[in-house]
Image (cartoon, rainbow, N blue to C red; front, side, top):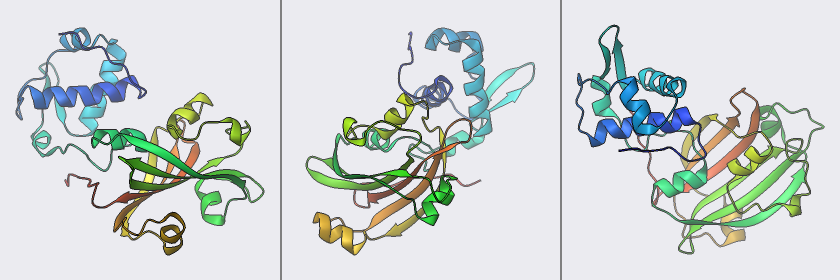
Length: 243
């Protein structure tokens, strides 16, 4: 079966996830041999360099291991792999879709401002720099499931703020300006929404939230987004492996 890859992630990351799915769906067990490079390139209609990069990512994640001269094999740790690891970097839009939610982004405010010390430090900006602040609520069936604040250096998006559609994926918008994030450094905590946010946006029923605060970087390591995302605790959970 031919399974061409098409989405906004890099080919290597797409392919890494598809091979991990192949291991699970075909019931490969620890010690089982992975299909050959030729078989995988044919199956996914992908180039050999992209495949090898994806296989290297799987090896780094300890999903597979290599025995030189024999091939690649499923590792024992693959049995402990989880479906939604918190270490996966993806846009909030993609993350919500993976949970089965069809979200509508309600833009609460857009502004240009001078960043506070925390934001300036995270984005490596000088005190005189400017940032775009985007405040949004993500709704599923008219129910709020995410409250998000994003900061983006103004220098990245020079267009007039109100000429742009902020209701879509911020990652896709950054990609249009050559600055799509590929990774992040994040912290996680369990919190309640700030009182002023609850009152201002009538979110009294939101309840406990999983707060993920992260600085997102391009593949070259340039910080392009500082994100503060409150995930409604009744709707989201994340998993991890420990080794």
